[in-house]
Image (cartoon, rainbow, N blue to C red; front, side, top):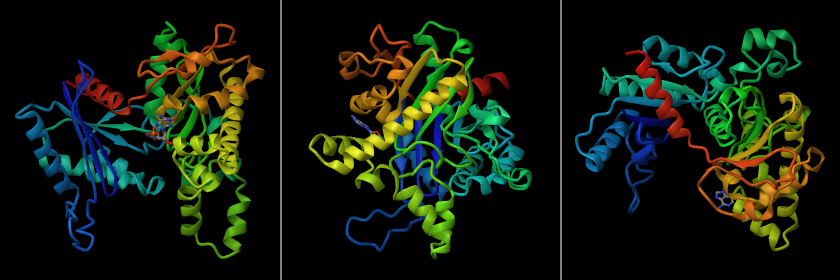
Length: 386
Ligand code: AMP
């Protein structure tokens, strides 16, 4: 089956056409500046599509040009927030679309854009099966003691304030591939997965299920990220509010100006590592803070899992930065974790072991592929609804 995978943002639409059985990408692209007009009409400025429907026309034209008259079997949407309702990918109908829309307050930047993508497809291809694959769904197995915040119950019952977790599609996919690499059935995999991209989260997996994860009510909680602070004392927000900062000021500072960028002036791990290697003290400190925070989570999740059988690195930094992996592993001696320097330094696109034989548990690098996971889930849901 050919699946069109759509990641619809407020002003962008990312797409891939995938052959699910072959596991290949037939074509892909990114439409940007949706609804932004021509930005002043200066020389060389491209006028963006007016809305998501127009963006979809561009996608359709690009796919046609690349692949001719192929027949799409389904569309799979990356949907950020599935709230408490969605624990699995679902076939979309009007009721499901409205349910996703009702979750808008929980993900005000993302879910409305996801719904625009869904509605654009519904209008253009009314008979096309569409599947929603939720970033939160894999974490619906978190036990209550892991998803509760210790605040008055009314905040949960009236406002849905609890921990949801994100990056679920990636964590689930990487857990399955890690189990395969270790020759285990997925339901016997106990491990800790560190998804380290521009956004970063770590998940505790027990029996193939998520039992804790570092992102919470929003993707801001947890690790030090490219531009997000991760955990901090909530009283800081109260302090800043009293000092005159608006909610928008605080939101922007924590989500866009913090993390590696806040500490080292740059959100790109490659730049920060290079700066640290050439003696930049701020960059070295940023790496120390980020690796220390992650190591603390890994230690905690080792306990949550009841003894991890593997530690797994994935996503842009996890897959590519041998330096950052080494910094984290150096802090995990108490768990008996030991990397093989040669294996860690080797570059490869394949899932692999990078620990020394003497390491208490294997350390793996397993490349993630969220689009592939979405395409596979979409084909499976459509197949089971035939
Ligand atoms: P992602 O969000 O998964 O695309 O990951 C983005 C992050 O991966 C950025 O911080 C990049 O600096 C980092 N990254 C990508 N390639 C490399 C590389 N070769 N070495 C170190 N970091 C990398």
